[in-house]
Length: 261
Image 1: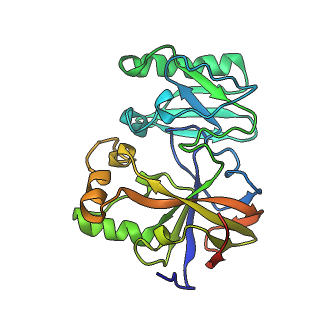
Image 2 (image 1 turned 60 degrees about the vertical axis):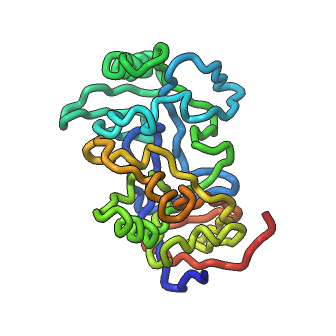
Image 3 (image 1 turned 180 degrees about the vertical axis):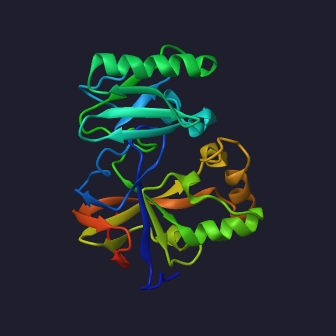
């Protein structure tokens, strides 16, 4: 399936703390072989994992608080300030925790909040984790996740109701592609703004997509719906940045030739 030339980047999001609030960006500077800046830069450890910030090794998302199992995270509203590394968490409109994630006191404040609020879901004391340049992604590669809004519209029809694209926690949301066209783009290069990205892998969806990002209700069965209708649970793709540059919302998204994987 050939993607049309009229496709464009509808939205850009980052997720500074794994499992917490998506943060929209008007534009972003991409670097070769890297994620979006500060994307999944922090995670909340759910019980001891042996994670070494000086020598980080990728671990599965089940080692951290995350939406697949801890849907109440979606009821929180968080904001990460790049200049101060301060994380602010709100619940029901009120600030319930705030701390500089670079400082012991700030981390302790955030950890105490999660220890109290998620006590029944913890396997041990929660701990704020980060590693220099490390990303707590669901995959070991440093990638940009992409959702085709045409595929979400097709999913709306399968389910019979509007599905919030933010359930898929992508970095780039692309409008103008036919439904499921992204699944046939493995190995192809995308030209977006000044950057170039090579699509390397389909995204297999998990139960995190069943959680409404606004209400925190686990109200859909998206992986099962995809499996029943398509024979797989894939929706969206991962791409590696192969040429850095500035990308902004509204940029055209052009699909170039296939490149060796």
